[in-house]
Image 1 (tube, rainbow, N blue to C red):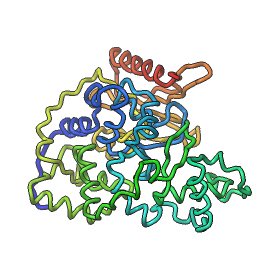
Image 2 (image 1 turned 90 degrees about the vertical axis):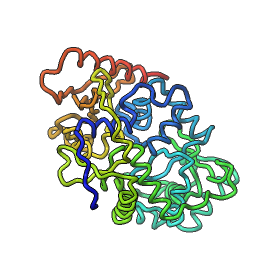
Image 3 (image 1 turned 30 degrees about the horizontal axis):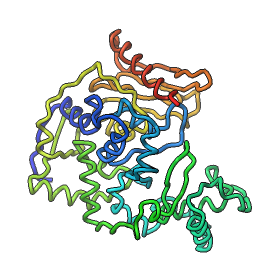
Image 4 (image 1 turned 180 degrees about the vertical axis):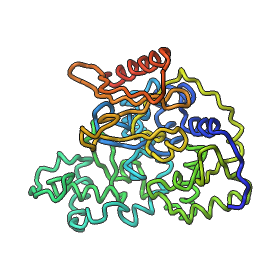
Amino acid sequence: MSATPVRISRSLAKAIWLHAQRLDTDAPFGAGAAATPAAVRHLGYVQIDTIHVIERCHHHILYTRIPDYRREHLDHAQASERSVFEYWTHALAYLPVADFRYFVRDMRNGPRMHGRWFASVTAADLRRVLARIRRGGELTIRDIDDDVLVEKDHPWASRKPSKRALQLAFFRGLITVSRRTGMLKSYELTSRHFGWEQLPRCATQQETLNYVLERALRSQGLVSMDSVCYGGVAGKPAIRRLIETKVRRGELVTIDFEGAGPCQHWAQPETLDLEPQANPARVHILSPFDPLVCQRKRLSLFFDYEHRFEAYVPAHRRVLGYFACPVLAGDRVVAALDLKTDRAARQLRVQRWTWMIKRPPRALRAAIEAALHSFERFQLAE
């Protein structure tokens, strides 16, 4: 990149990212059920994960940005309004249906991930599952009771062969998750669920590259090559060429900020007009899978905070705890809380509280405790 970098402060760099993530204001997407698809559209995706120590991460991520969020809002968006769908980005995620065509190429080419996982699925297996859904409507894996159970060949595998056929049909876009009950997925024919005669037109490779970059700019503000291509969603050489073109046209500027080192960043020129106004009283208890947290190197670069996800680390080697959640106060990560919801006792328990700052003021602890009480009420709401 030949453009001379624009030097900005780290506080502005953080403010730009926090603003892009809509973590610098209250209720940025409004209230009620309409806020959920609006949040998914802006963020580009909301990651799904099965861990249920506290709240499922997709609900946690949305609650962080929608104070009156309810789980049924996501169900409404998926099953009734049909404005979001599930597919694979860097992980399984909720995506806006408006973006469906950018994933059709992956669907046609077969699953990008876990190719060997589906090697045992035959064309007959696939036809049988699709025919069953076509005749009887949506189904879950629990509805399949006529499989001959087989031994697992992987700890996460199902003993029902039809599950792999369902998963393969899902990755190919033939079926979609029409709703979730907890983490139990119901599958329906994609065309029937959305009322389509066929899948949307496949985006060209150039359209897809533009989409990936635009999504990153919208949700990250300042982007790097790693942050745009996180999880292998696009090839770095192609994205680099696209960024070079936009820099030459003046659509992007090269950015440098304190601590960034050799890592190049880019932003749209108007992004730099933002004025940092961090409010330390605004507290967010973040999911370990939050878009602000999941890119660990980027988080460390901007916030000087090294997050450790220790659910799979032996207990004696844990530093922050089994399921530590970073606490964002204003523009600083000030603590990490290892949380666990005791649903029988109807309490949110703090297993470990680790401060990331020296001599935290009482007002900060009070603000975090208030945020914990609000989060507890959300989790325990039926």
